[in-house]
Length: 354
Image 1: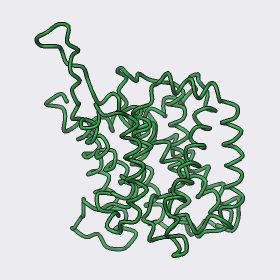
Image 2 (image 1 turned 45 degrees about the vertical axis):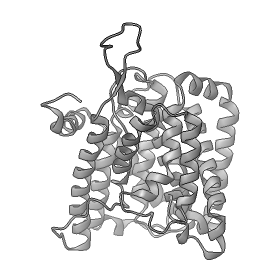
Image 3 (image 1 turned 180 degrees about the vertical axis):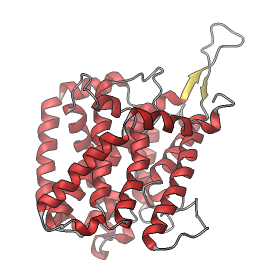
Image 4 (image 1 turned 90 degrees about the vertical axis):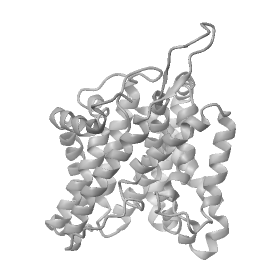
């Protein structure tokens, strides 16, 4: 879920588009399962998805954020390296889409609640639009951090994320809990070079896939029994949401959740095909429209009572809901919606180039 431009230094990379298709399907599937009553089967799937789908997306968003700078022409000395200019569109475009998404979810959530109010708090967000708000804030930091040492930025973001869990004021205001909590994944993606990423995924392909599969099985079999006490950490929530006996262990538990997210993400990136796949690769380039629209469909399904037809205690019903999420992902990635979405996305920027 990020900018679809194909300029250097990160022109279209096929396996990343393939990975983004799988990730946006998982986003849709996770949101489709969320309204269900928790059972062992549905919860284990839910926990598995939420352990890594957004950290991996955020890592890819950081990787593609390299395009946020364009090279300007040198003005005086021809021997000078031309300065890199921050493209303000990378800051404003996510904010514009956040405004639209926030407005639309306010309407659909109001339908579900039976009352649509006129007041919308655009500064506080804990639902699906949070990603767009956080993405804008992460981009906002890039001009200041561009000349800093990657190790210092990554270390600082990790320490800040770990300690912020103890600050009760870090919450849904500006989605700060997730903005800080997931920032290390964004900066890791931003600083890693394409060659380094390719080399790592190629050299360790088999052990990464095997380890990710083993961890997936572990989560899928034990989340209900063992991981319930720490489930809020997959949302990067404040440590105050943990059981009091786990409060002091918050940073260590967050590190464990990060490690699981990193391993599952690496396994997925190592496993996805390197060649273009019919339909899937193209849809992987259109994830933002799916991210916004699928949530509205989910809300309307709730409003019209379709979830009352789902028997969560029947595994076939849950699997059917996952298949529906897959179908919705395919349908929302069509060319017509992409063309319409691009028009809406670019609406504030038509008179000037950013």
